[in-house]
Image 1 (cartoon, one colour):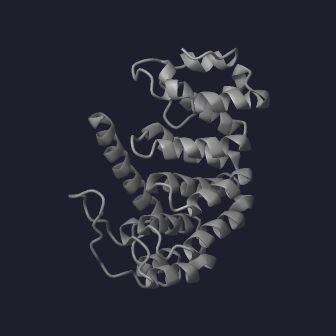
Image 2 (cartoon, one colour):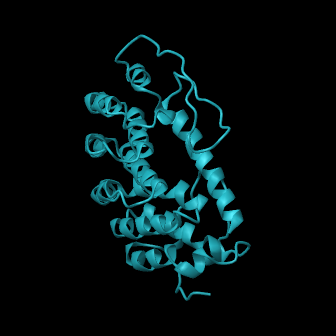
Length: 262
Protein backbone atom coordinates (compact mmCIF):
# COMPACT_ATOMS: atom_id res chain seq x y z
CA UNK A 1 0.00 0.00 0.00
CA UNK A 2 1.33 3.50 -0.78
CA UNK A 3 2.69 5.36 2.22
CA UNK A 4 0.64 8.35 3.36
CA UNK A 5 1.19 10.03 6.71
CA UNK A 6 -1.63 11.08 9.06
CA UNK A 7 -4.15 12.54 8.57
CA UNK A 8 -4.10 11.48 4.87
CA UNK A 9 -4.01 7.82 5.89
CA UNK A 10 -7.63 8.20 7.06
CA UNK A 11 -8.69 8.52 3.41
CA UNK A 12 -7.28 5.06 2.71
CA UNK A 13 -9.82 3.44 5.00
CA UNK A 14 -13.01 5.38 4.17
CA UNK A 15 -14.04 3.02 1.36
CA UNK A 16 -16.95 3.48 -1.02
CA UNK A 17 -18.75 6.79 -0.41
CA UNK A 18 -22.22 6.75 1.08
CA UNK A 19 -24.93 9.40 1.23
CA UNK A 20 -25.65 10.08 -2.43
CA UNK A 21 -24.62 13.55 -3.56
CA UNK A 22 -23.68 14.67 -0.05
CA UNK A 23 -19.92 14.84 0.52
CA UNK A 24 -18.45 14.60 4.02
CA UNK A 25 -16.61 17.60 5.39
CA UNK A 26 -13.12 16.24 4.82
CA UNK A 27 -11.52 19.24 6.49
CA UNK A 28 -12.80 17.94 9.82
CA UNK A 29 -10.24 15.16 9.47
CA UNK A 30 -7.53 17.77 9.97
CA UNK A 31 -6.72 18.17 6.29
CA UNK A 32 -5.66 21.64 5.21
CA UNK A 33 -3.75 23.60 2.55
CA UNK A 34 -0.45 22.15 3.74
CA UNK A 35 -1.65 18.70 2.58
CA UNK A 36 -2.45 19.74 -1.00
CA UNK A 37 0.70 18.24 -2.59
CA UNK A 38 0.09 14.86 -0.95
CA UNK A 39 -3.62 14.99 -1.77
CA UNK A 40 -2.73 15.53 -5.43
CA UNK A 41 -0.31 12.61 -5.21
CA UNK A 42 -3.08 10.44 -3.74
CA UNK A 43 -5.71 11.54 -6.26
CA UNK A 44 -3.43 10.67 -9.18
CA UNK A 45 -1.69 7.66 -7.60
CA UNK A 46 -1.73 4.89 -10.27
CA UNK A 47 -1.34 2.16 -7.64
CA UNK A 48 -4.49 3.33 -5.89
CA UNK A 49 -6.47 4.15 -9.03
CA UNK A 50 -5.76 0.73 -10.53
CA UNK A 51 -5.95 -1.21 -7.29
CA UNK A 52 -8.20 -4.07 -6.25
CA UNK A 53 -11.76 -2.88 -7.03
CA UNK A 54 -12.98 -4.67 -3.89
CA UNK A 55 -10.52 -2.91 -1.60
CA UNK A 56 -11.15 0.18 0.52
CA UNK A 57 -7.94 1.81 -0.68
CA UNK A 58 -9.15 2.02 -4.28
CA UNK A 59 -11.59 4.75 -3.14
CA UNK A 60 -8.86 6.94 -1.63
CA UNK A 61 -8.28 8.98 -4.83
CA UNK A 62 -11.97 9.93 -4.86
CA UNK A 63 -11.80 11.18 -1.27
CA UNK A 64 -8.58 13.01 -2.14
CA UNK A 65 -10.03 14.93 -5.11
CA UNK A 66 -13.13 15.82 -3.10
CA UNK A 67 -10.87 17.22 -0.39
CA UNK A 68 -8.94 19.22 -2.99
CA UNK A 69 -12.24 20.73 -4.12
CA UNK A 70 -13.19 21.67 -0.57
CA UNK A 71 -9.76 23.25 -0.13
CA UNK A 72 -10.20 25.20 -3.39
CA UNK A 73 -6.77 23.91 -4.40
CA UNK A 74 -5.91 25.64 -7.68
CA UNK A 75 -2.75 23.51 -7.93
CA UNK A 76 -4.91 20.42 -8.39
CA UNK A 77 -6.59 21.54 -11.62
CA UNK A 78 -3.77 20.59 -14.01
CA UNK A 79 -3.06 17.17 -12.44
CA UNK A 80 -6.77 16.30 -12.38
CA UNK A 81 -7.13 17.24 -16.05
CA UNK A 82 -4.17 14.99 -16.83
CA UNK A 83 -5.86 12.21 -14.86
CA UNK A 84 -9.01 12.75 -16.92
CA UNK A 85 -7.09 12.47 -20.15
CA UNK A 86 -5.24 9.36 -18.97
CA UNK A 87 -8.61 7.79 -18.06
CA UNK A 88 -10.25 8.67 -21.39
CA UNK A 89 -10.04 5.18 -22.87
CA UNK A 90 -10.47 2.96 -19.82
CA UNK A 91 -13.13 5.13 -18.24
CA UNK A 92 -13.69 5.97 -14.58
CA UNK A 93 -17.32 6.68 -13.82
CA UNK A 94 -16.66 8.37 -10.50
CA UNK A 95 -13.89 10.57 -11.85
CA UNK A 96 -15.82 11.84 -14.85
CA UNK A 97 -18.94 12.43 -12.76
CA UNK A 98 -17.27 14.16 -9.82
CA UNK A 99 -14.31 16.09 -11.18
CA UNK A 100 -16.56 18.75 -12.70
CA UNK A 101 -17.90 19.45 -9.20
CA UNK A 102 -14.35 19.62 -7.87
CA UNK A 103 -13.54 22.26 -10.48
CA UNK A 104 -16.71 24.10 -9.54
CA UNK A 105 -15.68 24.22 -5.89
CA UNK A 106 -12.20 25.49 -6.78
CA UNK A 107 -13.90 28.33 -8.62
CA UNK A 108 -12.46 31.18 -10.66
CA UNK A 109 -8.80 30.14 -10.21
CA UNK A 110 -9.57 27.01 -12.25
CA UNK A 111 -11.02 28.79 -15.28
CA UNK A 112 -7.90 29.68 -17.27
CA UNK A 113 -6.57 26.13 -17.06
CA UNK A 114 -9.95 24.60 -17.91
CA UNK A 115 -10.40 26.87 -20.92
CA UNK A 116 -6.93 26.07 -22.24
CA UNK A 117 -7.58 22.34 -21.83
CA UNK A 118 -10.86 22.47 -23.73
CA UNK A 119 -9.30 24.52 -26.52
CA UNK A 120 -6.71 21.77 -27.14
CA UNK A 121 -8.38 19.51 -29.69
CA UNK A 122 -5.90 16.72 -29.06
CA UNK A 123 -7.72 15.96 -25.81
CA UNK A 124 -10.52 13.41 -25.76
CA UNK A 125 -14.21 14.22 -26.03
CA UNK A 126 -15.12 12.93 -22.56
CA UNK A 127 -12.28 14.85 -20.93
CA UNK A 128 -13.16 18.09 -22.68
CA UNK A 129 -16.82 17.52 -21.79
CA UNK A 130 -15.94 17.22 -18.08
CA UNK A 131 -13.80 20.37 -18.28
CA UNK A 132 -16.63 22.29 -19.96
CA UNK A 133 -19.04 21.15 -17.29
CA UNK A 134 -16.45 22.31 -14.77
CA UNK A 135 -16.60 25.83 -16.21
CA UNK A 136 -20.38 25.77 -15.91
CA UNK A 137 -20.13 24.43 -12.34
CA UNK A 138 -17.91 27.38 -11.39
CA UNK A 139 -20.64 29.79 -12.52
CA UNK A 140 -23.29 27.86 -10.61
CA UNK A 141 -21.20 27.59 -7.45
CA UNK A 142 -20.03 31.22 -7.56
CA UNK A 143 -22.69 33.32 -9.36
CA UNK A 144 -20.39 36.36 -9.35
CA UNK A 145 -18.20 34.52 -11.90
CA UNK A 146 -21.02 33.93 -14.39
CA UNK A 147 -19.88 36.56 -16.90
CA UNK A 148 -16.34 35.20 -16.84
CA UNK A 149 -17.58 31.64 -17.38
CA UNK A 150 -19.99 32.59 -20.16
CA UNK A 151 -17.17 34.47 -21.90
CA UNK A 152 -14.91 31.40 -21.74
CA UNK A 153 -17.63 29.13 -23.14
CA UNK A 154 -18.48 31.63 -25.87
CA UNK A 155 -14.84 31.91 -26.94
CA UNK A 156 -14.70 28.15 -27.27
CA UNK A 157 -17.77 28.12 -29.49
CA UNK A 158 -16.41 30.96 -31.62
CA UNK A 159 -13.38 28.80 -32.34
CA UNK A 160 -15.44 25.65 -32.77
CA UNK A 161 -15.93 25.50 -36.53
CA UNK A 162 -14.12 22.34 -37.58
CA UNK A 163 -14.04 21.08 -34.00
CA UNK A 164 -15.84 18.02 -32.62
CA UNK A 165 -19.59 18.77 -33.02
CA UNK A 166 -20.24 16.90 -29.77
CA UNK A 167 -17.97 19.30 -27.88
CA UNK A 168 -19.76 22.24 -29.49
CA UNK A 169 -23.08 20.71 -28.48
CA UNK A 170 -21.89 20.48 -24.89
CA UNK A 171 -20.83 24.15 -25.01
CA UNK A 172 -24.29 25.14 -26.26
CA UNK A 173 -25.89 23.08 -23.50
CA UNK A 174 -23.75 24.80 -20.86
CA UNK A 175 -24.65 28.23 -22.25
CA UNK A 176 -28.32 27.29 -22.16
CA UNK A 177 -28.03 26.14 -18.55
CA UNK A 178 -26.53 29.55 -17.73
CA UNK A 179 -29.25 31.25 -19.80
CA UNK A 180 -26.57 33.07 -21.77
CA UNK A 181 -28.79 35.15 -24.03
CA UNK A 182 -25.80 37.38 -24.72
CA UNK A 183 -24.12 34.45 -26.52
CA UNK A 184 -27.04 33.83 -28.90
CA UNK A 185 -25.30 35.39 -31.97
CA UNK A 186 -22.31 33.08 -31.57
CA UNK A 187 -24.57 30.07 -31.09
CA UNK A 188 -26.51 30.99 -34.21
CA UNK A 189 -23.28 31.20 -36.22
CA UNK A 190 -22.20 27.77 -34.97
CA UNK A 191 -25.50 26.20 -36.02
CA UNK A 192 -25.36 27.97 -39.39
CA UNK A 193 -21.91 26.42 -39.92
CA UNK A 194 -23.35 22.97 -39.12
CA UNK A 195 -20.78 22.69 -36.33
CA UNK A 196 -23.11 21.55 -33.51
CA UNK A 197 -24.32 18.05 -32.66
CA UNK A 198 -28.05 18.71 -32.34
CA UNK A 199 -28.71 15.52 -30.37
CA UNK A 200 -27.48 17.25 -27.21
CA UNK A 201 -29.42 20.52 -27.02
CA UNK A 202 -31.55 20.48 -30.16
CA UNK A 203 -31.26 22.75 -33.14
CA UNK A 204 -31.17 26.51 -33.39
CA UNK A 205 -34.96 26.70 -33.15
CA UNK A 206 -34.84 24.80 -29.85
CA UNK A 207 -32.08 27.06 -28.53
CA UNK A 208 -34.00 30.23 -29.38
CA UNK A 209 -37.10 28.86 -27.68
CA UNK A 210 -35.24 27.75 -24.53
CA UNK A 211 -33.53 31.14 -24.28
CA UNK A 212 -36.87 32.90 -24.52
CA UNK A 213 -35.95 34.61 -27.80
CA UNK A 214 -39.11 33.35 -29.45
CA UNK A 215 -42.52 32.23 -28.23
CA UNK A 216 -42.91 29.83 -31.12
CA UNK A 217 -42.27 26.23 -30.06
CA UNK A 218 -39.83 24.40 -32.35
CA UNK A 219 -41.15 21.91 -34.85
CA UNK A 220 -41.12 18.32 -33.64
CA UNK A 221 -38.06 16.51 -34.89
CA UNK A 222 -36.36 13.25 -34.05
CA UNK A 223 -32.88 13.64 -32.63
CA UNK A 224 -31.06 10.33 -32.69
CA UNK A 225 -28.00 9.89 -30.52
CA UNK A 226 -25.12 9.13 -32.89
CA UNK A 227 -23.03 7.47 -30.17
CA UNK A 228 -25.35 4.75 -28.91
CA UNK A 229 -27.33 2.71 -31.45
CA UNK A 230 -30.92 2.16 -30.44
CA UNK A 231 -31.13 5.12 -28.09
CA UNK A 232 -34.49 6.82 -27.90
CA UNK A 233 -35.05 10.08 -29.78
CA UNK A 234 -35.11 13.21 -27.70
CA UNK A 235 -38.01 15.62 -27.81
CA UNK A 236 -38.06 19.33 -28.67
CA UNK A 237 -38.73 21.44 -25.63
CA UNK A 238 -36.60 19.39 -23.25
CA UNK A 239 -34.22 21.60 -21.35
CA UNK A 240 -30.51 21.54 -22.05
CA UNK A 241 -29.90 20.20 -18.56
CA UNK A 242 -32.26 17.25 -19.10
CA UNK A 243 -30.62 16.40 -22.41
CA UNK A 244 -27.11 16.73 -21.01
CA UNK A 245 -28.05 14.54 -18.04
CA UNK A 246 -29.38 11.85 -20.39
CA UNK A 247 -26.24 12.06 -22.49
CA UNK A 248 -24.01 11.73 -19.44
CA UNK A 249 -25.93 8.65 -18.33
CA UNK A 250 -25.50 7.12 -21.75
CA UNK A 251 -21.80 7.90 -21.72
CA UNK A 252 -21.53 6.42 -18.24
CA UNK A 253 -23.11 3.15 -19.39
CA UNK A 254 -20.74 3.03 -22.34
CA UNK A 255 -17.72 3.52 -20.08
CA UNK A 256 -18.96 0.72 -17.79
CA UNK A 257 -19.20 -1.64 -20.74
CA UNK A 258 -15.69 -0.72 -21.84
CA UNK A 259 -14.31 -1.25 -18.36
CA UNK A 260 -15.91 -4.70 -18.08
CA UNK A 261 -14.28 -5.74 -21.35
CA UNK A 262 -10.77 -4.93 -20.08
